[in-house]
Each structure stands twice: as structure tokens, then as C-alpha cells.
Length: 241
Image 1 (tube, rainbow, N blue to C red):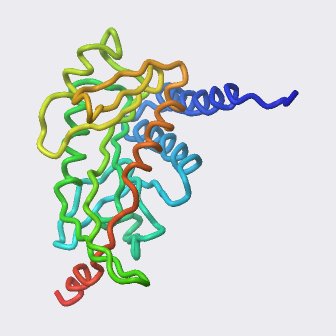
Image 2 (cartoon, rainbow, N blue to C red):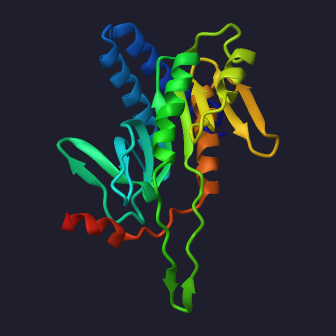
């Protein structure tokens, strides 16, 4: 009989992330320090458990027209097919074509934080993305259609009672151009996502919320496929300015 237990492994993964987030909330009083601590806990989760083709970092996103997004707490992006990612004055800048998903990290889900996350997500989705034809040994594939960039909110808890009830769904459903939230995690309660077929939000209460959310996110990333072939020369024109 094996001494290993898959349920125990999943429980340990969830306990680790929830413990880190809870410790950050209790230990740090300054809002900025508390925010940085929460972001780092989620970043560590993604860097440890996402497949190697994905990287995660705090970053701005830029397009070939010279437009920049707001700074995002977490950007999940490609490095296998991305020709450049900039590090400038301690800040990371990622081309829009390389982005799979963006997340905001907050202590708790509430109406203000949800609207804030929607606005930040919108600043990324508004950016222009190029997509070139893809040459291969037998010819050329047409440009890859652009997939929707996943946007989400990550929190430890939720201000509403019940935490994962109608108030959460109502605030998630409010319309914001380009700023819809596709998926999110309330580490102490469960996770939620927008079901594209049913056209509504599904809430999944779970004692292992972080683990369940991570698996759902990986499935969504797999569905996105690979990033488009970036038009590098569209960016190079800025060297002439």
C-alpha cells in the first residue's frame, strides 16, 4: 500500500496558500505592504504549479501602437513563443500578444474591489494585438485568431453574507466594457467562473478552494492554446522615434 495520498497533497496545496494569505492579513498593517504580500502569495502559487510554458509576474502590458495598460498585480504570459519581455527600472513590461491572463489581488471581494478589478482588466483587453501568418515546412498557416484574455480577481475572503451568494454574482455581472471577470478565487470559501455556454456565473464552494481554482484556471489556459505570432517589426518602428 502506497504511503502517498492525493487528497492529502491537494489539501496541503490549499492550506499553504490560505495560510500565507491569512498571515499577510494579520501580520501587515500598512495597506501597500499587505497588498504586496498577497500578490506574492498568489504569484508563488502560479510560478510553482503552472506548466513551464507560462510565467507569472507583476507587470505593465504594452502594444505595438505604444499604448500601456495599468500595472497589473499578476500577468500570466508566454515565454516559449515571446521574443521579448522588457525589464525597465525594476518594472516588467510585456507585449500584449504574449498575455494569457491578468489578475488583481485584494484582501476581500466587495463591490469596490470588483469594479476596480474590472477597470484594470479592461486596460489590458483594450490593447492592440498583432497576429502574423505562421510559416511551416509545407507552406504558411493563416494568422491565429486572437483568443480572449482571461481576467480575474483573487481574494482571501468576501465581505457579503453569504460570502458566495447573490450579492457576489450581481456585482460580477455588472457590465463594464472589456472589463468582465472570467474567473476568481475566494481562498477561504471557494471559486467562481463565467460559464460561456450557460451565459452565467457558476459558484463552486470548496474546502480546498485554491487547489480547485488552480485546476480550473489551468483548464482555461489549455483551452486558449498558444499565443499568436507577434509582429516584431510593428514594435521596432518605435526605435525610429
